[in-house]
Amino acid sequence: MARLFRAVAVTLVAALAPAPALADDWTGYGDYGDFGDSGDIGDVVDWAFPTDDPSDFASDVDEDFEPDQILALNLGRRSAGILRTLGFRIREARKLRALKLTLYRLRPPRGMTGRQALAELRKADPQGYYDQNSIYRLAGARTTAPGACEGVRCYGQAMIGWSAAGCGVRVRLGMLDTAVNVRHAALAGRKIVTERLARTPAADSDHGTAVAALLVGAADSPFPGLLPEAELFAADVFSVDSQGHASTDAAELAKGLDWLAAQRPDAINISITGPDGGVLHTAILRVTRLGIGVVAAAGNLGPKSPPQFPAAYREVIAVTAVDRQSRVYANASQGRYVSLAAPGVDIWTAGAGGAGVFREGTSFATPFATAAVAILKAREPALAPEAALGALRRRARDLGPPGIDAIYGSGLLQAQACGI
Image 1: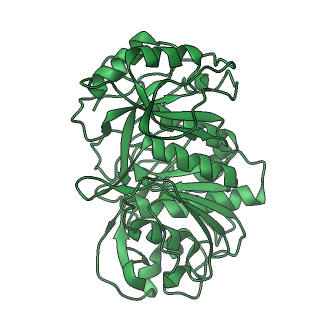
Image 2: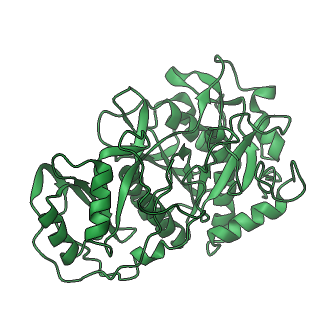
Image 3: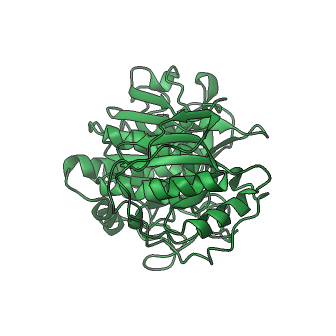
């Protein structure tokens, strides 16, 4: 799959101009780049890995991108004029106030493919910021039938030295995922704030509920969470695609990150994977520069797969999954971006209808690291995300080849009964 372009700095124009003609289904705002932050787009100049030639765009039939959409950030007067001249229309405009960005979803002229549209915009407006609208999917699966949480079914906490009843630290957590079923028995009485940001129809709440239960499940339920006293802010960014699968895109993820950033959580959990994308990277940079740690699933496409994002961005803590024998999950993606390992095979958590199921995947390893980052941040509010990662790396139990490696990162997360 083609890798995306290296972003360039632009100077934002404070003066506003009339918006281009708007599509009938346009929603949001009609102004351009009115934050006046001239350093905004220049933030995205260093990628986790070298990018390919900017002309090497993905095919329009590539399932990793929305074929009829282009994204833009902080359009100025000059860019607005170019869009109007070329016949582009704005489908959606949204101010991401916490991130100080304005995000636009553009519709190419009739008869122009997405690939052609991106090439045309980059040629006509080299100082503008345009990107494909990448598609992202969940990073976990159900494995076995329901049962009860006892003994080996709750091995994950014991394996990393986490308190079996959860740690009673009052932190603020964020998560990007599907909807959360707050009526599930595991989440009864929990402090959960949800926000629906994606387009309808909504995806099934199974995955989001499972992740939420791992994070904040009631201590006296069959699905005790890692931080049952935490406040959880859950951004629902998933919809059902034309094949009936849960998916989201870069625009929805950026909206979710903006909403979460405004809640000022101690850490954000992202059990989602997909391709590299400039809009997502910009949003991630903005969040981490607010001092909020971002923890993401390393991916489930196997050891030969390309890097998975957002985990592969250097600002993100990437988590792989291991089983109870500390063996890496067979389908885990591998690479130099992997930061840490955590339990992620046969993880017992909430299922549909109030039941519980075993699950596997890097999706379900990620909450362990998210909870650890949140505890460190709550105890030391000025702690930067990179410093939190450094602390977890130093305390990790080395696995695999000595030192940091592409399979386990720095090794297995260690919590020392939540002293971290």
